[in-house]
Length: 99
Image (spheres, rainbow, N blue to C red):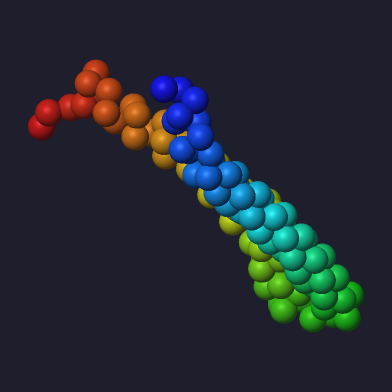
């Protein structure tokens, strides 16, 4: 019976592995593109700051930080982990308060 199931599910397993491979390649390409955009934005920001355009330089510095891997993706990871812990604590019966 196990052998029959393995034979029947082999195409499904192959398709799932292929989908995982495609997703990994997409993530690597996206990380590569974000790295290049962050580098170019940082270079442009430093040029703005060196030419004396402080206001636009600081704005671009904030934008560069947000698109970098430490900006929005880092905050999403940080707050995502804390949100999961807070939800679990809220669902714990000892922390629920009945008003």
